[in-house]
Amino acid sequence: MASCRVPLVLLACGSFNPITNQHMRLFELARDHMHSTGRYEVVGGIVSPVSDGYGKQGLVPAKHRISMAKLALQSSNWVTVDEWESQQPDWTETVVTMRYHYGRILKEYEQSAERHSDASGNFASPSSPFPQLKLLCGADFLSSFKIPGLWLEDHVEELVERFGLVCVSRGSLQPERAVHESDTLFRHRRNVFLVREWVRNETSATEIRRALRRDRSVKYLIPDSVMEYIRQHKLYTEDSERRNEGTALRPLIKQAHQPIKSLDD
Image (cartoon, rainbow, N blue to C red; front, top):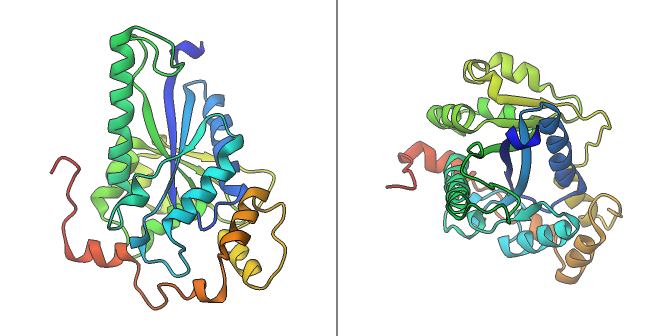
């Protein structure tokens, strides 16, 4: 019965530079898959754009990426945009972002349990299973674990063991192989959910930015509202693509020189 299922929130972190239809499709695919397991009831989705401190080339200011994401998700009744990560002065580790959101979710659960009310439709009663939070990602995300210096090993461990991953296949990438080749992922493979996308869509934000710089149409790849926002604010030009050019990604710098503090520190 659905009432016995574990309430689940899906969190997607990334640049969203700009958000695409494929980004939003990931949520729909993941929800269908997690429901099909018979174990989970997806009660919400969160889009969390990175802060400007990430340092990725061509990254437009967070205020624009947030606005575009909100426009794109106006039609969704369960996925929302959260600004917390984007407002941090420095790049925030994915695990730290997940700790923040899970703490907020647990607080909501506890408040609902205290009220003994099901008005929210999410975590309705004190007898409900504790909610879970899992990271939603594309298949390319798993490959990032192998990039030297990008991840701390204990962060990968916490991410997969404590929270879990819902990974949607993309193009010719093979997430199964990534799980096989990583001892950490393999050890916690029961908490790594691989979702097959049979209708292939290899749209990427990189290709969309390239098309926009070349004055090519991106209609049907991103929402019309996002296209109009980009036009109004003159985003994704040759000048904007040079933003952060030659700058190392903040994760490679930060994690190499200082220990990571928890939110409780």
